[in-house]
Length: 516
Image (cartoon, rainbow, N blue to C red; front, side, top):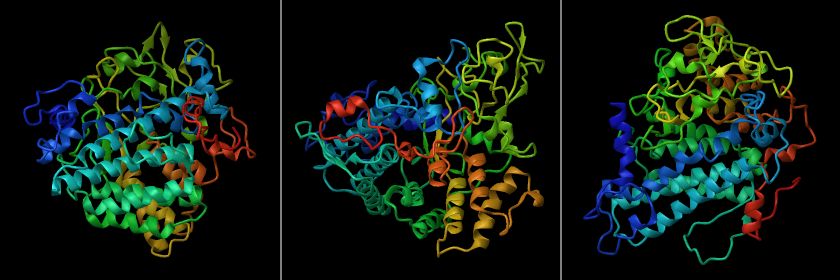
């Protein structure tokens, strides 16, 4: 059923429209068939035309945006293991916060975001003259909401960026707007288009922005308003979280289904995800996450067709945030590893015992019994035995209900006038109850639910979900010492990434971020 759900959505980009034959590539020629007499009319036809907007979303893995957001945090460290994972020093630069405008993660991420924005503008331009209809109105709102999400990611990462809302290849190179102006643009776009989006939460809208996705993105935007503009907007965080909560469309998964919502057969059947990017091992490639984390020998443990890459791990300090009785600790692989039959995992004659604490240096060396076994490995997105050429079927969750509850609680703790401390405690305890099997001793009270406690709880709940960098910045923790990286309190400018050298060369109207 999962494959039917995902492929039914993913293939919308290749469905024949009118008399046009089915396609295999989502290129510009496909859309040239639309004229004033041959515009899309049905919801299915509109969905087919908008396929590239969602294909672009799938590229955030293989264009390094996910890597850029994760690998400078305390959640992820990618040490060098002998000759493995040296990669020109890119991971060392991310860990030590010594990236430069020439670092390829910045270039690839910038290109991903602005290419996706250009795709949105191109399709909006194509649809501008289509006859008015409810389908057109909703489709335009969906594209603009996706464009707002792309802009949010670029503004969060790079700060002052151009705002372009038309598709005109002959136009002059755009100048930057201030981060506050980009913030206001994103907020306006979302508030204007959210009422036009579907309220339906089902297979039909899975992977596309709904009204609730827009409100969640607004909540996240306002949660970071003080960082982005200098002015906090905590009441608006609560207001938008309430819209999602009061919709009744979402619920926390149970402890029994918590990890299944991240698994290879995840999809529209789960009640907690609010917005996901669908992946498919053949038709929507790019989810390579578990390959980055697993040891080579885990190929036999999980019945994989290729060896994983034995790279990404977490820092000892972050690993220690998880208590043994916390359900969420089981997303980490550490200690004695097992093969498919339950026996000790042996790889190249070495017993695979992963040590979460063995980090004598950033280059751990290539010894099978030391450097290659260092660090706990994350399997929140469970390894997929049906992966094809390392491409997994797990859809990637962008927003989910647990984050909405935590955002509302944080806004209340920070001073929102439209919520109470009792509400905040209850919201966080809903998540704690799931994690600790309803153990009253693990619940927060008004006395101990501090901002620091909430910061740690967000880390435990949302690990590997591309939230940690923004959390560390918002909580003032980005410049703290982190494993090998010393504290760098004088480098707050690194809360923004540098605008890539290639972008500056291509557009003389861009100005580099201060400090770079």
